[in-house]
Length: 309
Image (tube, rainbow, N blue to C red):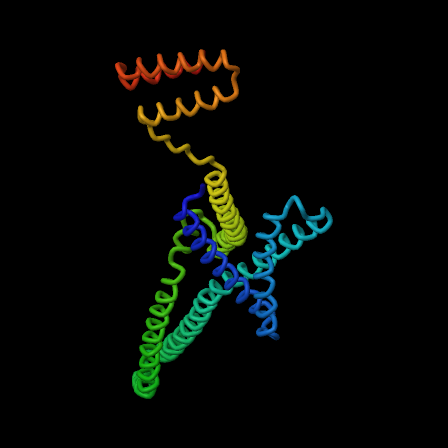
């Protein structure tokens, strides 16, 4: 018999895994067809419920179901499992893409700000180069040009400093976002592959295990429950079919035994001839004289001998 705690554990595991698989599948399929999100989610929910019910029914009625109908049910369960796996794949990939897209957006901002900062620095270098190109013999013109360019250079340097602060802020944002995919980055570096390939293989592993495990847990729960029910029914039938034990008969006293013997002799004498009746009376008198001097056990043995005669 399957233990009760095993059935409880199977029930909890089947409920949690099946519920999460259904939730991921419904949300993932809804994300794939976002134009009619509510209708698609309702359809996916009904298909998930039908899949688990069909799996349990087919397991219990495998031998009694028509082969064609059984083949269709198996095909339907396999297709529904594939649809669920697609939904789970969509949900997990969307969860990764949300973090990956945020990192890409911050990287674009960072690159744009770096290009802007480089342009400012190039402008400062251009102004300085123009001033340096003035001949040394024309010191007055060179000093005047330096003086005229000083405010522009100060403004450009100020904008470069501001750009540097923006770049630092963007780098910090990227580090915060990378914390969400930090383990994936480590795995990608460990296997020397890019992070997108790592995520793809991990999602495939989850998809191959998640929904099939949920179906197997539902089938195991129904089998364990049915096995426990059959075991209880067999024990109940066994207990009802056992014959009742015979009650011990109370010991007969010597006086009751003597009374029973006398009744037996009287009945026998009534059915016998006169000669046989006289012989029976002699036996009875001898039995009465001997029984006075015998113990209860001896009396029982004597009565048995008399019955034999």
